[in-house]
Length: 248
Image (cartoon, rainbow, N blue to C red):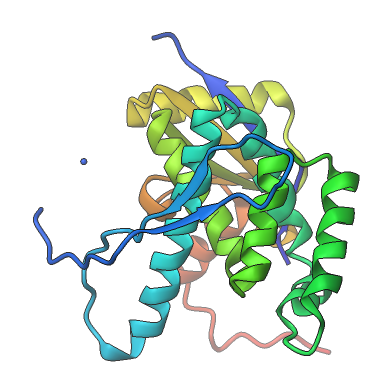
């Protein structure tokens, strides 16, 4: 099982066809705080391309909702000049809610919301979350949309990467690569994409045997596979060894 490693590093360098769109009314929510002078949190439904297949309508609605919340949080962070620290907070939440027991607690309708807010306060204090991020988490509890938290984190990352002209590259290896090797990979991805910045995320996957893979581009659509596993698979396809049996 592949496992996500430490907080992503960012490498900085030297120097968007028509589609049918859906529109919905804007929802305005104020951040939950009586003592803080914080900007309005505006939830704007994203305009998404239509996709075929009626069975995916629920997924599209969830996708749109997550994107709307992510954009709202990003706008607040931008107005507060806290994009970098808010991004770090969102990464903390994504990791925290990757625990199935935690997510099940917050999505359990039989648990009192006041108890959930108490836990939110504890999470905020222990993780050192900024007030507007902690309040955002409370909003998700109140709106019963805490189940979207990890999707929101993904959408938030996409928004920030677009704003900062950052290309995300996921490097998967058997063991943790050295910082200088990651920096070299970032430079190569930059050459391939002409991105202003390249952000590296690392994943550990023992099944690769040795070597590494790099995924980048839209939703990780592009792959550079330098793993031994890939080489073994290619050798296997070239050899007809189906009749060979090993003695036991």
